[in-house]
Length: 471
Image (cartoon, rainbow, N blue to C red; front, side, top):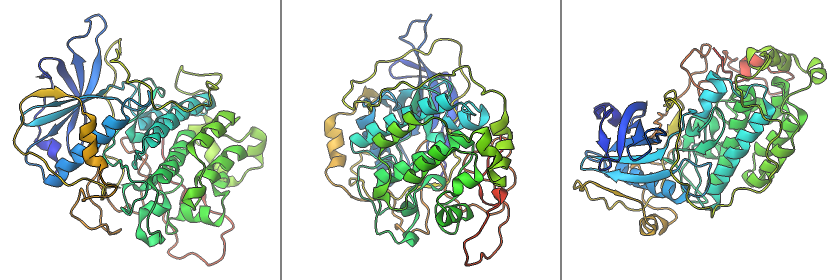
């Protein structure tokens, strides 16, 4: 059921006892809508804006109510731990609706920065700075025992154009260090052990799955491409990597040092993957993500073809935010930092916030507390979530499910609250990416029905790389 379609348009409405004016809708998902909201208490000369997510409270299944509560509790737990996590400032409950007051990020999401605006194209310092911010946000969550499980460009927001990164959407997050809930997340960013029981893993580590997802996101930022559709042997791109760990350098014009980092991220043994502090240090010390001109002349035809692509060959990146160096602080953000104050955006209104339902995602978490939800509408009030709220969740590592479906790898269930995503089986033949499509729709030519038993000598770039057309 798409709950957002049944919601009225609240643009122009006042919520929070007159505190917030919902100016305009900037995003929509299956479970709710997101508005840019003006803080009526802010200085008219320096107006302060928030993003407010509106969700229905009534006519929801008990499991949906539990999922709402879990997202609030885990997001509230990590909200003040890092400047690179989208802050959940407060919760507003009315008789029929609940509102999440969040940071407003006028820079949009990371997908917009990568593909639509091409902000990171060939801009090594900018990629490094933005990715370090992302690492700091995710590491802060991990320090508190919260694992995101749905890291992808659409769930990462930017306060500035491509910078001031904020991790968002904790609808699939968990506190379980070990999980048996396979297929949770978005398929293009899932680790092999998370995808399904077919990979013969009895369980997986959400922490190490997050590290894998970060590696795919970094490939997105550097090349504008996904390395594969599914990290399984049935995927031709991933099969190429299984045959040859230097496969990505055979098909993309990336430097040897960057390829070495990717090999440490994309290790099949989860516990042998690079840690986030180590990854941060490696990125800071990296000279470049790309091949030199001399290396490119000796590179494979596939890598040369990729380098000729418009994404790589434009003269200058589409941003004024060019940095000569990354801040050389190799210390990860202290998770005990105090909660950030309300902020002011200033300036004219920004483009709409790009919430997308773009990637196949599923939710089968079994780590929820038993629902004890009062379906009686509450009185209007504003409150922050207190530690006792969190203890309801914390009491067990793995409790009743948010879904009544089994944890079968062949069944997909509900996606996160916002941005909503639906599970689907991607087709092998896909046309070139057109305007409006997303990073989660890779471009694959038709592959042969069978592959020989021998190790292939060459993979065609167009046949195996999940490619994203820029326009």
